[in-house]
Image (cartoon, rainbow, N blue to C red; front, side, top):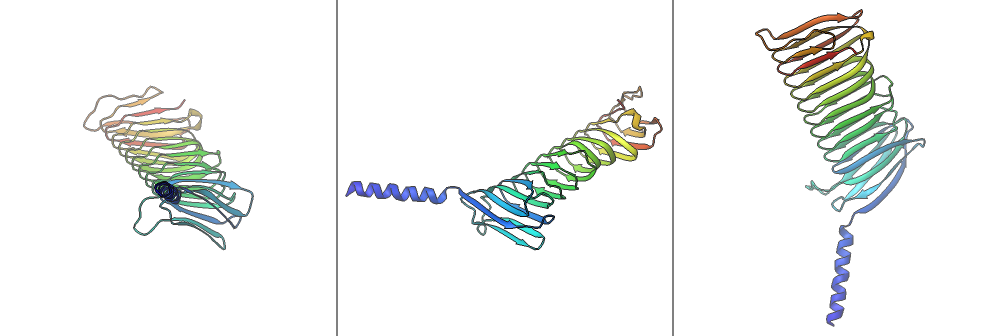
Length: 292
C-alpha cells in the first residue's frame, strides 16, 4: 500500500508540474495585405517578420501565468493580445509572428523585447524596459521606451524617425531623411545619408551624429551636460552656429575655444556654400564639429 501511495504522489506531482509548464501556441488568421497589426504583450519577447502571404501567423510559448492569447481579424485590422488573469502582473509570452510584408505594425510591451524585420509599413513601437530592434524598410517609425535600448537598421531610403527614451541608448544605422529624438540620459548614435532634418535633445546623454547633409537641411542639437560630436562632409556645405556655456568647442578646421567666460564659448561660420544649417547648444558639455 505504501508503494502504491508513493506512485500516486509522484503522478500527482508530475501533473502539477505539467500544469505549470510553458505551453505552445499556434494560430493563424486571414489578413489584409496592407492592413494594421496590433500586438500587446507584457513580458517575454515579440518577434515580427514580414512575408508574402495575406495571413497573420502567431506561434510561441506561453508562460504559466498567461490565461490566453486573443488573435482577431476584422477588416484591415488584426489584433494580437496576451491576456493575463485579473490583477496579475506576471507572465508573458515568447511570440514569433508572421505578417503580410506591407503591414503597418503597432506593438506595446512592458518588459518584452521587440524585434521587427522585413515589414514595409509604418511602425509604432512602445516598451517600458524592453529593448527594441527594428529594420526600417521604407516607411516612418515612431518609438518610445523608458529604459530599453533602441537599435534601428535602415535601408537608406528616406523616412521620418521619431524616438523618445529616458535612459535607453539609441542607435540608427544607414538612415536617411528625418530624425527627431528626445532622451534624458541615453546616448545617441545616428548615421543619415542624406540628412534632411535632424533634431536631438538630451539632458546628460552623449550624441554622435554622422551624415551627409541635404541641401537646405536643418540640424539642431541641444544638451545640458552631454558631449556632442557632429561629423558632416565639407562637400555638403553648411553654416554653423555652435555655443557652449562652459564646455570646450573643437573643430577639425581650426576654430577652437577653451575655458569659460561670462558669455560662454561660441563659434559661427560657414563651410562651402553654406546651404544647410547646423545649430548646437550645450551648458557644460563639450562640442566637436568636423567636416571630414
